[in-house]
Length: 640
Image (tube, rainbow, N blue to C red):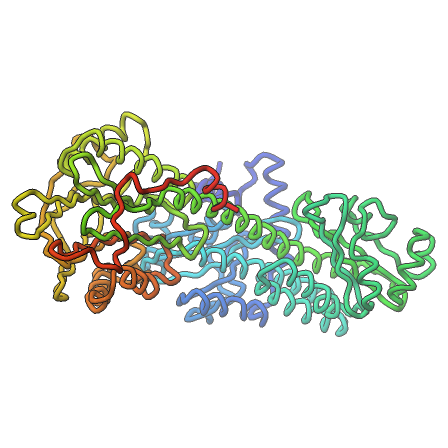
């Protein structure tokens, strides 16, 4: 019968499981154990130590460890302040990396002392681990054999970018473990020189950030490190799956590069066969090449090589491409050489798979961003400018295309003669947020025209409409009305009346440069509850004053308090308040919205004196009948 410790290990993925397991599970555990034992390096392997130290430094973590799991957990390499722990062994039941390996994916612990998965483990109870980030180590034969982790004593929120960086380092660590294992198996010094080069090359692959660079790096650097005289890297043409796009090393000359740049998968060439069959093709000398295919005569002449090895770049059952090595001299292709070539190809395949996935993600994010931005821009209103009110707006999409969101502004007149101003931000940063923004914006317009009431009543009606129409969005919003009754008109005043649903406060700038945020108690976000109490607030607008409504992208910065961003906006806007409104808005956007991490919407209104003609810089008076509207053709143009 399994002990409680064994049962815990079984739940963690079977590391160290006992003989009560089913035969298939037992065999899988034995294979995994065998793979891990093969990779156990001599303590202090320099390449592995360098990767551990690099992980600690790049992720600003006090400790980093490369751990392998057999019947115990062995620290194969350590970096940072725990570098001296290399070679230590602990029971699997006390190691966080056991859980990390069992998860098979990025394993994140932000606050270990409150995380029920790990709070009972010894390193957490001793206070050594407060936050933990790990990526599994995968052997060339597909077994999870351990984990690369970084950790610190205090809680920490790990970012997705940090997880991806650690994943790249884990790939390098796995490659280094494989190289180290081959190094122990291959005793001759020539092989060791090659393996050192391959180890450095594996680490270099983590810095390659696009497929073209990867292909060039593999062909021009990696094959040279293997002692080849030349070679090629071929990938499946994304626009034609029956064709390989091939890059030949410069040593073969430009004519050969052009001739074999596009190779049909049906060709009688080793590269095509390797791609079709997912099997390594070895041609040891000139006679073997010519016997293989008559097409090889042209290859021999073009390249000057007499021996070739084409190895598929595989990830699971999928073939992503083929790496071909060429030599001027005949080759024996013994077991050790073939193992080295296939290890090299496995490293290249993992890097290529990562970059293809990244390329696909970027392309998808770009499409979503363009669609979302087009939708947003199609809904950004041409503004009315009644009487002596001047209205201007600016919208800037997020610098990161993946962060397309739900920021919007609006301005329109209703039948009681007031001008409505709206600024809002639907939660989320994707195409759904942009669509929900359009729904909220349009419903709000309809409610404001149907219910000619103060802003708080309009927003309360909007809460009901959002529920009844199942819009399903949460949104901040600030709805303001610029009013002017007979008494205000006699004094040259206007009244700004607004209701705030969780949005940032308006900034009021007087004609003499004095400024204040109109900070009043704000109500809950739209979409939370139809029973939300909403309140109106008001302030007189003196002639020459300016009101700025804005979204959080204008003031928020990563790692900074919101108050700092608000202070920056107030200081700059006050200093620029003497400028015409268009210049004021343009300068604010140029100085505060450059490389903004979130969308930025800015809506400004300036109340000009009514005892004088409307200023020329304010442009002509525009009423609803003077405005144009976007058409579907306009939206299509935005997407293009």
